[in-house]
Image (tube, rainbow, N blue to C red; front, side, top):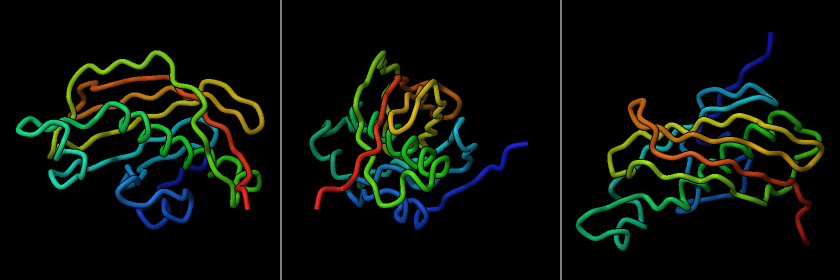
Length: 151
């Protein structure tokens, strides 16, 4: 039986270096280390990108959904390999098969489901599905790498 973990906002801030307005996840409700994670982003009307994307018809940019996937994957990776990831950064290296099916709008509760596909050492590959109310909004495959911070 695998241990599962949750992370609140403070735990996320202690794990990855992103800060508002670029911290794009609010909590992680389930992490199975080395396997999967589910994160949540409560999309509010006050998000700074809605001023220009698009006035009168606000839509969360697809690239920010991809970044949200990467942030959830980074937290899962950190819980899976704490000794190898402590004090390091997670860099997104590839995005493949990205599809955006439905717009994510203010008021949506965005569920970000991440599954590990493969990986060895510092390079890992994941699949992500974004859902609102059980409806698929977007999906993609992405790779991320753990790298040392430059002084």
